[in-house]
Length: 249
Image (tube, rainbow, N blue to C red; front, side):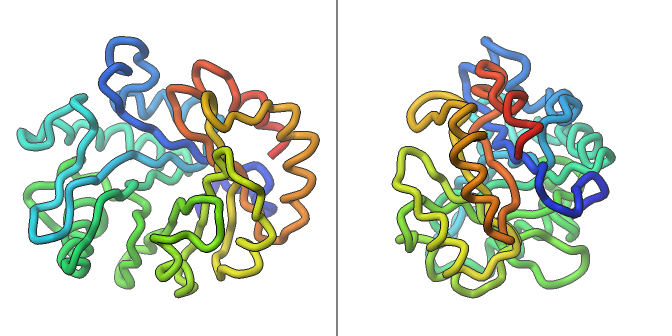
């Protein structure tokens, strides 16, 4: 991945940085403007910004950061500074994609390439910084990471068709209150790395000691183990979960 990623992949923690309305008033740490501060914690190796949720079916794709900034007025372009600051530390910054593509997958892929990746556009929602990847495979120019966050039960009803292509770099399985099907995932899907997806607080929470002493020794037996994905930054700040497990993943 980047220079800060260890060769053993044994210390990779991914965070989903979600921008929700109440975060603006409750915690500066949850704001997209604090992207630099997020990366400066030293807890994460990949940051996912969520979501690009309006897309497909002929509509113009639009990023939704839940009221923190207004993409229609180019108010989110200031995020470029934070993206570059993270990338300068060797931290990957990805754009999380939501919604349905309908019959317009190619058009959406072109839009994402031109507006968030290595293409050209006069209306880049997050400014001129070039993100490291999204949930699409753009096979041209700069290396772009392809990732997915399927539900735990195998196979995932919505993503299985895409996952079986063997094109994905990273798969962070959402083990949120679900039976553990780790072996099935790692043996059935051709992906470079698999991550244990967990909430940093709330429903599906796994105590850090249980993760360290019971879960990690099991999943680390797989050569495809990549690390832990935490959902999300706001809850991780409250629980301190990332710091508790950082030396063990």
